[in-house]
Image (cartoon, rainbow, N blue to C red; front, side):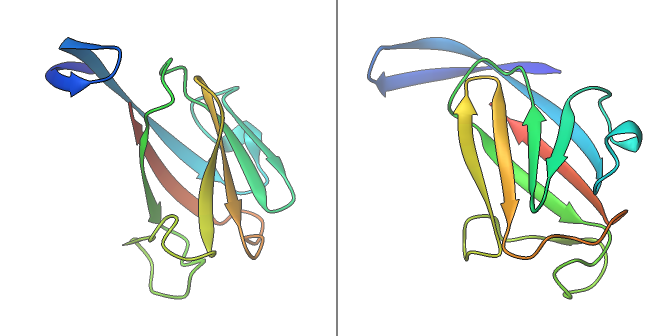
Length: 115
């Protein structure tokens, strides 16, 4: 899904820019049951997401379906607000999500990236 936005006053140009989104269903430590297939990998308290948005400018949203943060199921997480969770840019097509405490296996997160 893509959309166009008009940009002005931005270094490197302006005009009409394309914006896309990708949605991930992340089942912690279970890459085979996370979607999109082949785009999610795990290592300890981190999860790498291959988004293929071809931009370093990404807005992220995490829905904590599995209640990892103990705020209740289906509550949005405050990404980068505290050290509970944060995203790291790896390249224009990949990001790494890091948690302070590794989620238990099979905890569910829905992640949306827009860029």
